[in-house]
Length: 244
Image (tube, rainbow, N blue to C red; front, top):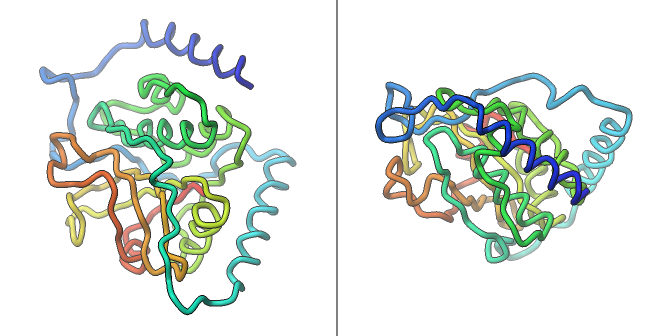
């Protein structure tokens, strides 16, 4: 697997040398709206599913269903893996998904190096104009590591979203991904018609979700902290997809 990953990085680096860059004078091609926007939502499958994929998805959903029936705790506690993660800002206006995958791969594999965001963007066919299709994230994660199998879920119901995030982050202790749609910016640090974030924690009663946001520290969301909590019920209203 490591040889395959090293070969991938080399091939992408070569391809990127010949790939045209669509940038403005500041080095970033921004939508006319000016709102952070790096996700194009897709209701399609994450990939053509093999028998192995279907088996893994069934196993994950069975585990999540079992966890949904766990006994309630008297006191809710934050279950977080944030302290073990390495934060990375997105390097371009539409690179939220590459930045999320960069952080997630580093944590899951334990490798000492980071994949370059440009390489990950190339792998996911990220457009510098519109961003990344939301169903490209899980295949990228699965193709570049075999420690944890990720699944794409489009428009999950609130209970399903919370259950799948709990199963991934709180139980399996690996990061998840969420893509949100919040063009009004209500109860958030910025407005966005499509943005990807890393989920790095959740309260044991599933009441709040902890995020690691690649927009933090950038000029496009200057007041956004790198790690923050939001109510799960509110997040359910702006969540369009998750990778868990």
